[in-house]
Length: 142
Length: 142
Image: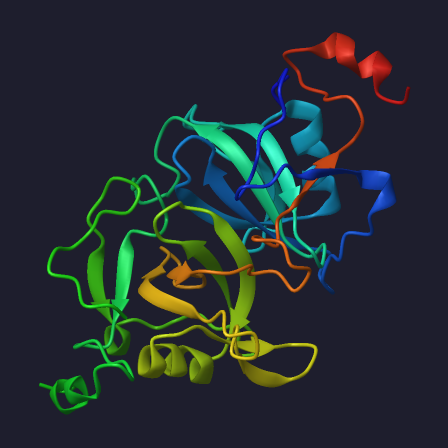
C-alpha cells in the first residue's frame, strides 16, 4: 500500500478504517471472495478476480495484487509475467464483508486479451427496450 | 437503457457490441453472475450483486437494475421500496463472460446502511506493509 499523508474519500465519504482482525470476511464455500480491481485515478473497473485469505495476505505483504486462479487452482500475482503488476493503493470492503475493491495503479492492459479493461464489450438485445419507451418493443427482433 | 445518439468509451475504448444471443454467459452452478454496479458519470462502484438470467432479462425490459437475492431467494428490483431505483445506462460484459458491469444513474444511497456506496470501509492490517518499505514490518503489531 502506498503511504498517504491525507486520507481520501471514496464515493464522497471518508472510509472507516477496519482492522482485518476486527472483521469477519465472508469467504464463500470455496474460501473465496470476489475482488473488483479499480484504477485509482480514473475509476475504471479493470477486472474482477477471486481472492483467498492467502492471496489477500500477499496483497498486504507485497503491495501488489494477488488472486486465486479457479481454473489453474493456484495463486497468481497479476502482471508478474508481463511486468504490468498492479500497485495497490487501498483495499475497500463492502457492508456484508463479502466483496472487496482493490484500488490500484495499473499502467498496462489488465485483460489477457490486451484490452485495458476486461469489460470491453457491451451487451445488447438489439434495440433498447424500456418501460419508458414501449414502442421500441416492436422493433426488438428486426 | 437510455437512448444515446453517440457511443461512449469505457476505459478509453469504444466497447464492442455483442448481442445476448451471440454470447454464452457463464452463469455459475447456482445460475448466477456477479454484477458490479457503477455510477456512470463519477465511476463510483456502488455495490456488487448477483444476477440470474431472469434478473438480466428484467434489466433490459425495465431499464432498472434487478438482482437475485441469495439470502431471500427471490428477485429484487433495487431501490423499488425507497424510490431510489438505479436507471441502467449500459451493461458491459467481461472477457470470460462471467461478470457484468451495470453502468447506472443512481440518485440516492446504494447501500442498505444509508451509505452512498457499499464500500464505505477500508481494510487495514495496522501499519501498511510493502516490499518497498520493509522497515514498516517491525511496527505491524504496535
